Amino acid sequence: MNRASITSRLTLLFAAAATAVLLALGLLIGNAVEQHFVEQDMDVLTGKTDLAAHLLEQVRSAADADALPRQLDDSLVGHHGLAVVVLGPDGKRVFATSNAAFPDAMMEPAGASSKPRSWTQAGQPWRGIVTLLPTGNRELSPMLVAVAVDISHHEHFMESFRRTLWLFVAIAAVLVGLLGWVVVRRGLAPLQAMRQRAAGVTANRLDTRLSLDAVPVELAELAETLNEMLARLEDSFLRLKDFSSDLAHELRTPISNLMTQTQVALTRARSAAEYREVLASNAEEYERLARMIGDMLFLAQADNGLVVPQREPVDLAVQVRELFDFFDALAEEKGLQLALTGSGQVSGDKLMLRRALANLISNAIRHTPANGSIRVGIEACSEGTRLTVENSGAPIPQDQMSRIFDRFYRGDASRHEGGEGAGLGLAITRSIIRAHGGEISVRSGMEGVCFELRMA
Image (cartoon, rainbow, N blue to C red):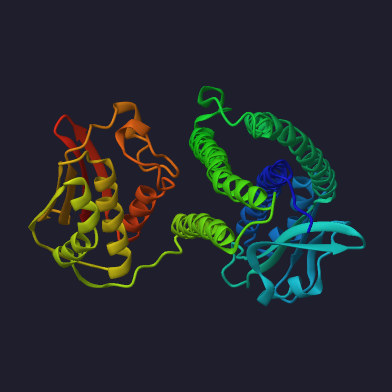
């Protein structure tokens, strides 16, 4: 599909608009000049008609009628382009100039009119009027007076004028198109600069931004939107880069373990019990990989809005108590105290919310030192229901607070015991809460760490 450029479109529109204006102006000027000639001819025609009317008013006898042709002829001396015909009451010509050439239809009393008429006789254009004028003798009927003027000179002038005018309009349209092209090219120069600037954006130069001071006001919003898009792309690219690096690091450990254990097992013949032990160890690594892959699949679906929770009433207190029972053995092993206060109900997917709460409680148990405490509080708030999970563990360093929900981020190893977990629990929890239209936040201090969920 052929696509016209903005320059071509604007140039054509500019040229078309200018041409339309010039055409309208040309028609207006042409009509005005032509009307001027009509009025000029009418001045001559009405003047001679008034002269004829004056002479006819002086006709009161037969002698006056006989003298009328001579008087009319004397009054037309020097008017070579003027034709006059006077018909008596009986239709006979009382007076006629040598060049008189009126259509027969105009020489009838019924055709008398003060409005000008134009015609061509023997290839010569004329404009004239026909009028019934009374004589000075009331006993005589009015005479028909026809006056016409040769408009050949006017016609030749108008033809030359129109030819010159339309030639000027055509040349002006071409010039306007060329000038419009130049103006549009200069006006769109900032767009070309933006295009060149955007073309320089690569994977290694995602920090490139468009200068808002170098573009017109009309393009400032576009430039700002492009800068925001570049910022999002840079952030997404960096996140993807970090994620790929973290993923490779996380997968390398279990795969390396599997390869090492398998290679060691193959170095010599072993008993069935030894092989069973190696397979059991490998099975644990496979389970870890399977969980990691499942968690990554869930996060990928959540990031693309593919996680749609099934809505049903969920009693948060009931879910927390059941999770306390599930983690009771692990908490008892560390001497942790689990406490629940308040109650509340939300609308959401029970299994997904249970998974999010399990991640928070498991995370709290893992980061709480021995003989510590974990408190879960549920209460109503302006957003609907608020749930907090507090533990008496060491505070989170301020520089780690912004990354606490990042994938594969496990923070300082000194803050928790054991190396289990891939660092996806909190990322999954945030995805679940956001899928339900809620939000999760964390605060930390000397008294411990508190995760807070707000849901409708």
